Image (tube, rainbow, N blue to C red; front, side):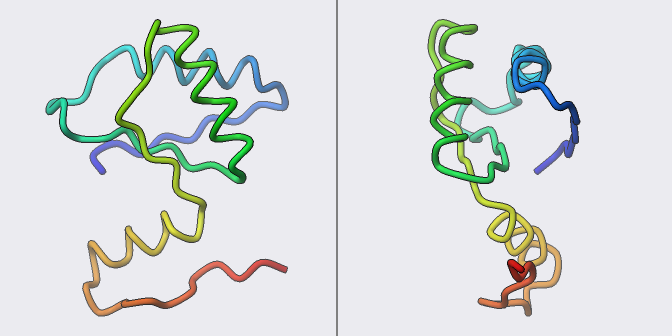
Length: 90
């Protein structure tokens, strides 16, 4: 988890264009997956299809939900936060 970027827009097409531009630069290791936080499985599928359309192919990417992403960050930093829920849906 080297870079953390947040893009905002009310149009998905703009967000997918920005994401495609950022992902044109590959990671240092081809074995490191890209990590894109999503709200639903449908969003994961749509983003995968958009990136495959723009890049010709799309693979080696993880799509965690926000709670999973936050837990992974805390576990990598604090090692003592095992199996705790950090974001409680309301």
